[in-house]
Image (cartoon, rainbow over all chains, first blue to last red; front, side):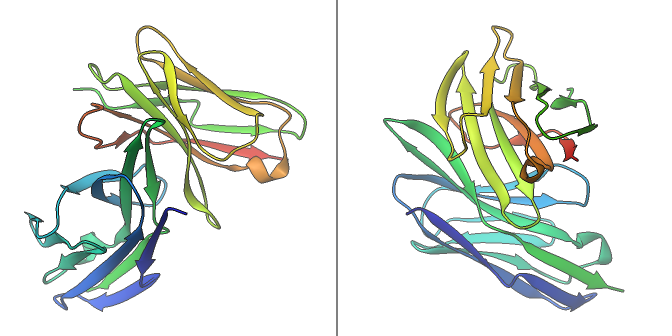
Length: 112
Length: 112
């Protein structure tokens, strides 16, 4: 069964304290791995797409990396405005069409 | 460029009723997918449409249905509502070959 697991469930950081979020996956027919940010009461917002092992993408204080079995979202010197839920998703494709499966998310709290 | 628009934003129904939710994708996006988000289950894939055809369906009962029109706008319908259908229903549009999803703000359904 296709599965996406994120850890930790919640992470509390002090402003400036760098850390990493993990996304591990067991799927077949992977067509890409995605990271999204979701603020309370809003829809998820697209951050990154990764397609192959070894690939890295950066945006401001965030950097996403991908291996064959997992992805990491590194947060460098976070600020309170980085507080949100970060969702990992995998896009699967085959003869039956495409679908995207999401992990449960990591809730990040950054304290000033 | 206008984002994904979902209507209504909030609605309250009683058990046994039915509900129709609407989604207008980003101009030029022909792929629309729907997700159910609850605190316990996270984001669950409902279905994906491309060019008016349902291309994939998640593991939901037949009470959940949808359709896409020639202008790419989409609707989803839930019949014979149950208490467990209370959730945030999110619509996302995408350019199908990239897989990056752009979400609306969601329709929050409460079933009493």
